[in-house]
Length: 126
Image 1 (cartoon, one colour):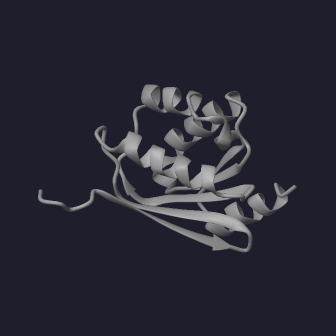
Image 2: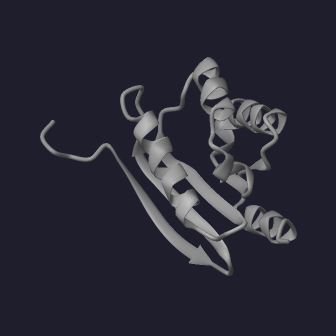
């Protein structure tokens, strides 16, 4: 395996929206590290909207693991509206993730179209 990184997170700003693009592979061993990196980016930002593009990441958490991760997000995450862009093939998982987040008091919404996601985030600006 060597030192090859299993995943990458690219960060940019687009019209006042923080955009993250995740690529590579999410595994049981690295998913906490990915989450911690994303949370760290959120904590350091002043943005009120974040788009997370996970179309290029392989692997998803199980439903139970997703539930507990969402329920344990720090308070920094609750201040920001999050649009998750994923492939239609992951609709069941993303719908579950979105509902779990909403039930935890978070503003998360799932999309397959990146422009719709950006439009939704623009409506969430304070």
